[in-house]
Length: 201
Image (cartoon, rainbow, N blue to C red):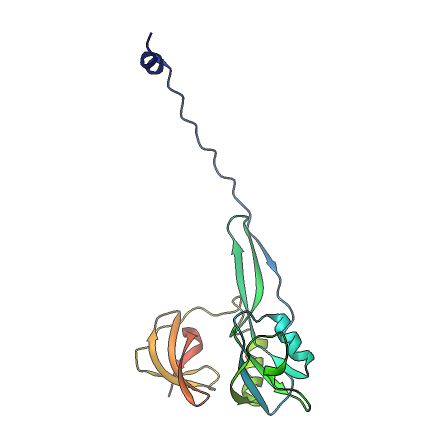
C-alpha cells in the first residue's frame, strides 16, 4: 500500500465546533480625582510645555514658587480585552498650563528637570475663573455632556454658551465644530463640541 493510498484512506477528522464566547461583564471604575480650583490672581501666563510633561513637571514648577493650574476633562478609557473601563482625568489642553509667578520666583525656563517651557501669552484672572467654573459644573466631563446639537454652516458667526468667546465656523458636523477664535492676539482654529455653541445674535 502506497503512502498516498494510506493518506487518502484515512478518515477525515470532524471539524471542531467553536465554543461560544462567554459574555464579559463590563466593569466601569471611577478613578477621577477631586477638582482643584485655581488661585485667585489678576493675570496668568499661558505656557506650552514639552510633549513629555506630566504631573511631576507641574509639581516641580509648583515647588519653585509658581501658582500652577491646568483644567482637566473626565474621559472614559477602556480595554476590550479584559472588559474593563474607567473614568479618568486628562488635561483639557495637554501641552498647556496656566502659571502665576509669585514674588522671588525664577523664570519658568530656569526650573530644572521640566523640559522646555515657552510662554505664549497671558490671560486675565476672570477668564481662568470662568474656565474653572465650567470644569466645576461638569462641562468637561463626558458623563454629563448633553446630546449633540445641529451643525452650523461654514462662515456662520457662533459663540460659546457662556458668551465668553466668539468666532467664525470653518467646518462643522453634529459632533465637532472648527471655529476660528481670536486668542492671544492671533486667530487660531479651535475644535469645539457642537452642542456647546450657539449662533451669535
